[in-house]
Image 1 (tube, rainbow, N blue to C red):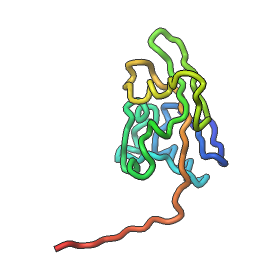
Image 2 (image 1 turned 90 degrees about the horizontal axis):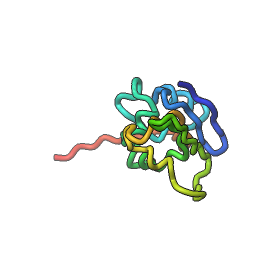
Image 3 (image 1 turned 30 degrees about the vertical axis):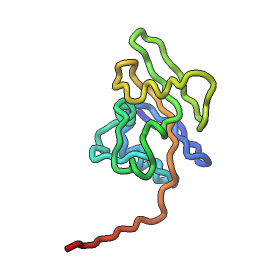
Image 4 (image 1 turned 135 degrees about the horizontal axis):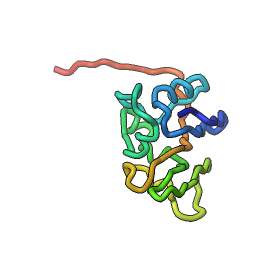
Length: 134
């Protein structure tokens, strides 16, 4: 349940599915990146569960769906066969897009055990505006 690797040039992180979303975001913040997903339950939810349900979250409009940011998946099917599609390529058209089948399947096709995620750079500043309408 830990972060295995981070490519600081491309922002691609390889993480085990049991890693808590908040811990992953804090780790990426130290390197200038962020998870393209933010949920109210980020302190307890795992990244594997988020991928299995194709969670949306607060950053959906800016960074897109989690499905679009996951580059590769390692999963274990019901018969014990390990499906290893941990690609770190942004575009990989060397066969079927197996990672996309597991994302959003909610565990019906197999249990996700590891992910590679494309993480955007963390913004340098956050601007907030308040306005009132009458």
